Length: 302
Image (cartoon, rainbow, N blue to C red):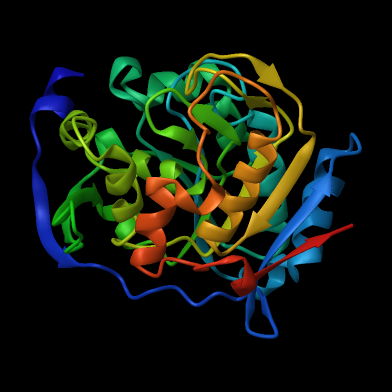
């Protein structure tokens, strides 16, 4: 673990990738779909995606797709991605015709190496069972991406993720004891090289989390909100059960709606601001990383 945390060996310096096209819009607005779970997980996720407009808008026969779960630690959900949730996502992407599917992440520093986390959590077994490829970023090559943000000028990210053709995020819905919340944008923090993570926590963490997404954006986000930490986070906390699955290609709109859900619970946490006043959300809107207000997106429910 010491080598990956202390050494940063990059193979190239590259520009930020072009902004993603949002495939799920209606009447000029981003769409966020939301369903209440009914017990059949595959049906629930498929229904959520159908409300959004269908997975076939993104995944075509022969595609290569990277899925980014949360393997921050080997703690049980909602601390990390539920292996069953990942399995269903893999099934749906395979059924849509994807030729190659990679599942990639880099665990938090205290839990490295990632492969060990994947094995302990059951994720490695699911990936193998589904015929996908497990990519542990701490074993891979890195590129330095110029993002030219207000707080981050460059970020070191996995080469394999930078080169990914299509990218799907699988965040969990929960609060975070340092970053206030960990949703779509915080999931992207798992891309950055471990040597850059501790310095990022020293000041302006929330703004820096937003600026990581200047390197690239996901094509689709499927959020597991069946169980959530409402205190603590990211690895432990008091658990509530919103019983929701949400999806969007707009990380701001999705995170705002997830925050709306989390703020509905009375708890001792850091969600004491208005929805659009969180530093992460303000920085993300400053950089036009999604909807800039509630008039720029629509929520589609059952």
